[in-house]
Every structure is written in structure tokens, then in C-alpha cells.
Image 1 (tube, rainbow over the protein chains, first blue to last red):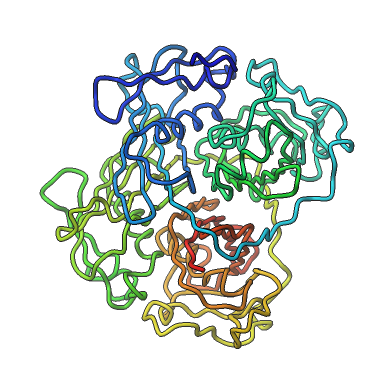
Image 2 (cartoon, chains in turn green, blue):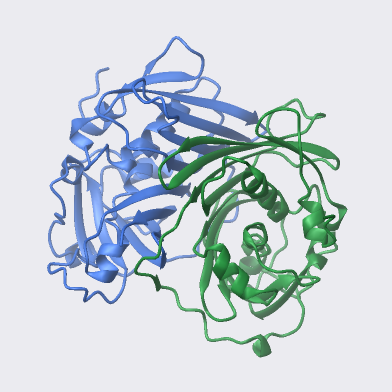
Length: 272
Length: 272
């Protein structure tokens, strides 16, 4: 079946004639300033794993390192199961581009697992905000990818004036694909990266910034994701420290029903 | 110079006759229940990078995946600089043991960078607790490694009674090496993993648990670490979600002077 949603088209991979390897192409729909939106790159790493015939279980952890800006054009992505245990499996992933001889464009590691029902607990309740509390759609860039998400901030809207007046780094926003699309693991991986750089909010100053590495933990299984349908998720992001060119930002994503679906953290380069 | 501190002895690596590769040996001083303390394994991955002649800059991010329990005995660790940019460098690391043909025992990725002075901000102030607020030394296991850290909890002591009465998952504790040792990046990587499994605290129930993957971001440079000397750090850890066999725990480590040195997150397997 030919995918019709722009996210599925961006993640289209075809088997290469080398083991563990797939071929893809950057998507203009998710273009960012100097490369694709990092969320789609993370989702591509995960999709390569999900396509692998040796896959065991479902995603638990994914770390993606952005080694270089991906150029517009084709790429190859190699996902290797480096260790398969009884109920967990460890993966390494690498993305390369023919025109780029300097090395990997992206590296990743992941853990997949067969999950069993156990005692469970949401230890971080969803903030008590509803979609009705949102202040309208967030638009913060001319980059194509930002139009592929319907983001509705409740708190921590991008500053309107860049006057250094920021007081905190917390954003809460409702988010879903535009057009809406049923939630799955690649979509959740991508949505972990939709939050604009915390340094912009905290300083009310716009400086160049780009994610260097992102880690996402998946707390839901595919059944729980399916229950979310194409509804909005509540996302929250906050920085912990800004220091000499790098800051971190943590994120949480809850279903509208209040289930914590994923938690994430990333380290971001910034200038000045 | 022959190292005399048990941490330095645990991290002793000698160059192998293969490129990018070093040889080491598990340490009885840091033994855990079925393998070495994960903190020393993470520190070993980082130390291999720090020993590499092509190293650029200092550690910014480290993700370590525990693919299998490391056996008592020798191991090899391979650290490859897969991409070197102007001011950042991306690494992949793999640890293997001869007797283990099933694949890697540990995989890791890391980012190192040359940091420049920029606008900086501690966005997560240290909790207002002092060493004098601590309730005595934490002892929670017969495992050797727990004796290598002087841990003094202020809040979230390990439950005395396993009766299911837990109410939250937050621990704050002062920690340093025992015997004291000047802080460096490998020590900070290891200390990110000293917090006992949050599931024990939240449930007041002791179930089998083990870290699957840990990510640590370093917010300090070596000069700032040197300023800490061999003093105590304040560590804080908290879970976000427990779900069907896996939970996450976030952690922060501040210097006694209140500088946020590192932030960390890990995903942990648990049973029942």
C-alpha cells in the first residue's frame, strides 16, 4: 500500500542489497533550517528497527545522535540487532549519505523488549490542563516541519519579543500530526522532539541551537498507542542547565486520557 | 604511575593490538549481584574514549546500554570516533568478552565537544539541603560496590519494611567515593548510577531490577570538576513511570557549591 500521510512518506524505506540496510530519502515536508527535522530522523532510525525481520518485541529505549546535518537527498540506514536475549534485544543504527565521506550522519542505539503485564504506576501525573486551555496554534518558524504538527501551547509560548525577559523554561502544549494520524512508535519518537529550543524561552533571546543527542523511553505498548487514535497528546518540556554551549531539555508526553506514554531528554548545542 | 584508588584500578585499561581497542578486567571491589556495578561499566566506556589519541574536547553526552551481564574476568572495549566535526565528535563504543559469543555485552554512544564560554544558567537549583541534614550512611545491599560510595540520604532512604507502603520515588543523598577521590568525568558517569531502583522505594517492595540503558549529560568542564575536589555531591533521583516491566528514573548531581554538574536518565527492567 502506498502511504499517503506525509509522515509515512517521509519514513518510507526500501530494502537495500546489503543486510540490515534500508534506503530512504529526505522529505521536503519535514525540512528544518539546515536539514530534516530531527524528529523524523529519530523516527527513521526506529522504523528501520521495526522493519527488521529479526525484531523482538517493541521499543523501550531509543537514543539518537545527530552527528552532522543530513543533506537533501537519499540516505541509507543500517539497523543491527547486536544482542538478542530472552525478552530484550539491543540495536545499533547508523545513517549515512553517499556524498558525505566524513562519517556517519546519525548514530543510534535502541532497546526493544517483549513486555509482560506487571504492577504499573504513572508516577508523574499529567498537569491539570485541557485542550480548551490552549491559546491557539503555535507558529514559530518558517521551516516546513512546523506545519506538520498542530501544536497548541497552554504555557510557555515562544516569546513574542526577544528582549532577554525570560523567566522559566517550561512549555506545556497539546500536539498531534497535521493532518491527524493514528499514533505509533515512530510518531511518538518524532513528537519527543517538537519542543522549540528551551534557550529561546528562558532567555527570550533567539540564538542558533540544534539538538546533538536525544533519548526517548517508551512507556506504552502498541495497544496503548492504538487507544490514543489520532487524538492530541499533552507534551511538556523544561531545561535543567545551560552551560557553555550546551543545554539539556527533558520532556514528557501524555495521552489525552492522562497516560504517560513517553519520557525524553535531549542535549542541545547553542551559540553565544 | 600505578593507580591505588579502587575506582582507578577498576578502570585500568591497556592498549590492545587492534585499533581503537583496550583491554580491562572486572573489579571485585565494584561487584554487584550478577555482574559489575553498571556505573563502573559506564565509566569504562567513557575512559576508553578519554584514552583515545583522536579525542576532541570533553564529554557532553554518554548513553550506555547494558546488553548482558558482564562475567567476572577480562573484557575488551572498542571506542571509535565515527565523526569528527569542527568542535564536536561522535563516538560508538562496544564491550565484549571472549567467552560470550552471543554478541556485545555493552554498547554505548557519546558526544565530546570543545566548549566555549557562553551565557550560562543553572535552571534547576540545588534543593536546600546540607550534609548536616543527612541521616547517616546508606547501606542497602551486600554487594561490594555499595561500600565504594559514602552515600548519606537526606530523603528517600531505602524502606526499612517491605510492606508496599511507598508514597513517592524521590531520593536526595550526598555521595562521594569511599575513600574520597578527586572528581573527574568517569567518576561523575559512575555516580549517575548510584541510586537504588526507584521501584523499591515507590512500592516499598523489593523486586528484581536492573538498568537496561542510562544516558548522562555533562554540564561541567574538567576545570569545574577539579573545583569539586573530593567533596560530596548532592544527588537526586525520581521515577516518572512504571509500566509493564520497565520504569525510568531521572537524576541530577550538584556540587556542594550548588553547580548542576550532570543530569541523567535511565530505564530499568523490573519483575512482577
